[in-house]
Every structure is written in C-alpha cells, then in structure tokens.
Amino acid sequence: MESPFKIINNKDAYDSLSVQENVLAIRSLKAEKNCLVLCHTYQRPEVHEIADFVGDSYGLSMQATKTRHDRIVFCGVHFMAETAKILNPEKTVLLPSREAGCALADTIDEQKVVEWKARYPGLPLVLYINSSAAVKAHADIICTSANTLKAIEAVDSDKVLLAPDKNLYYSFQPKTSKTIIPWEGYCPVHKAITKELIESVIAQHPCAVVLAHPECSPDVTELADEVLSTTGMVDFVRASSEKEFIIGTELGLVQMLQRAHPLKQFFAVYNHKSCDESCVCPYMKAITLGKVRRSLEDDVFKITVSEEVRMKALNAIQKMLSLGRDK
Ligand code: 13P
Ligand code: SF4
Image (cartoon, helix red, strand yellow):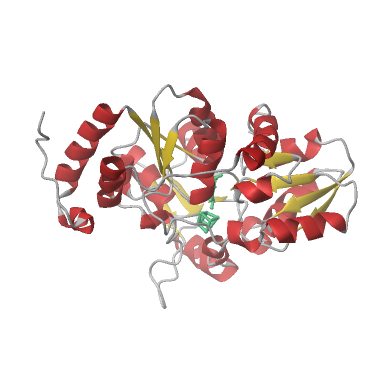
C-alpha cells in the first residue's frame, strides 16, 4: 500500500515539516517496521512524543533486554545505541544521527585503557557506561550514574580503577572504604554547570531543593541536597511534596520534569550572560524528528559491534544489569 505520508527525497527537509506531521509519519513507520523507540531524558521534547520508553542509561539498557521488536531506533547517543546492539546482536539498532557522540566517552579509547590498566596490574576496572564498546571490552563491570556505588562494591578488590569520569570519583570515594583510582575524563556539559552559576540560581530561589547529577564538579555537588542519576531525579521529584527544584543537569530533563509536574517549578542552571544554552548537550540534540523519520525510512545509521568485542563487553554489561539501582 502506498504511504499516506509525503516521502521527501532531500531527507533533511523533514525537519522543516510540522512536529505533528513528522510524529504521525514516525508512528506509522514504527508500526510498519516493528520498531521500538528508546529515548534518553535529555532528548528534545518533540522526540519524547514518539518514544516507547524514556529513561536514563540504566533504564534504557534494561528496556533493550526486554524487546521483541525487530528494530530499535535509539534516540540518545552512540554508546547507548551500542549497548543496545551488544544486548541484541540479532536486531537492527539504528542511531538517527552520526553527530550523536559523547565528549565524555571520547576521553578514553582502547589504546588508552589498555595502557592505563597495564600500570595497575590486577586491579579491576569499573567503567561508566559512557564509553565505547571497544573500551567496555576491557572492563570488569559497567556502571551508570544509577549504580556506580553498587558496581564498586561488587568487584572483588579493595582498590579499583574508575573511568572515564573523574567527577564520579569525587561523588563516590567518600561513600566507600575502597580506594578508587580515577581516569581524568569529564563531561563538558556538566562542567559548564559551575559553582558560581548554581549559587546564583540558589540565591534567586532560596527555597528550592537542589538536585545535581554526579557528572557535575565536586564544588557543585557539595551544594546539592541530593546527587542523583536522571531517573533518580525523576523519582525524587515524584515522591517530594516540595514545589521548587533547581536541576543540575542537562536541559532536556528540566523540561521533562516541568511537563510532568505543571504545578511545580523547575530551574535550569544556565549561563545567561554569555550563552543561554550552557546546560544543553549538543550530541543529544543532534537527534531531531526529521532524522528519526529518515532513520526509520532508510534504516540508518546501523550500529555494528564485532562479535569478539561484543562478547567481552556483554559480560561487563550483564554484571551491571544484575545490580539494580543504588537508590
Ligand atoms: P544518566 O545515566 O543519568 O542517564 O546520564 C547519562 C548521561 O550521559 C549524563 O550526561
Ligand atoms: Fe556525553 Fe555529557 Fe552529553 Fe551526557 S551530557 S551525552 S556525558 S557529553
């Protein structure tokens, strides 16, 4: 049967169509192609509309283990789609934009991880999920912001390597008796949430509860009432009777919380003077509805992982999935 939707040859032009038109076309393509759409909380609001599941890195990985669909379109960044492919080698996993990388994941590659591990023979590597499959293949266990402490406690050693985000070390070293040796990586989006910026938002909203992601710098997390993964923040807000929240993470989550709780107020941490988008991840925002539509129509861009890398990375990911969340 001929598609009721306009097929455009210049696929970038889909982004000039209305949200409603793209949403309807994508819903129809999802059904036709038996496709699951997984979406990270940081995605654009209109991308959330076509998702089957919205969550954090841990929740998205769990969902990827449960699907019976033939295809997964991953509205997130490359390492997340790779994780879904590792868990579903027989399925087609698509990432709608080639630009959807992760600056934090890029701070370590296979050669660097091999050299680093060689300096600490026998120490287990607890590896944050924000890393490539090739690096994951050298990990003992994967963790996300939702279960870093559990992963550190799960390995059989009182000294552990933790990569690539050094800010996780600052958040979790005080919570464990183990010695953590950190890699020097960071997320530039969370680094842009500075102490000065969050202090100025706190000064404007002194009654607000302050929530920060563990990727924020230690001088920011120490000002927070709670340090939580993105889903940890969603759960905290849902259970709280407070009315105002300062959200120390990417803008997409702030917008998602505001949509879900219209009677509460959420404040992002912007750098208003020089840039009004300091808490926006450009990699997450690379995915647009037009690109999702193109991805479904043309089966682009396919994620591939070699079987050798996949088997090693799978072992470390499965250990992480069996842990559950810290809280
Ligand atoms: P979550 O694990 O909390 O989803 O965070 C992923 C991420 O990329 C944060 O920058
Ligand atoms: Fe990577 Fe930072 Fe963007 Fe998360 S917010 S995807 S860690 S660059």
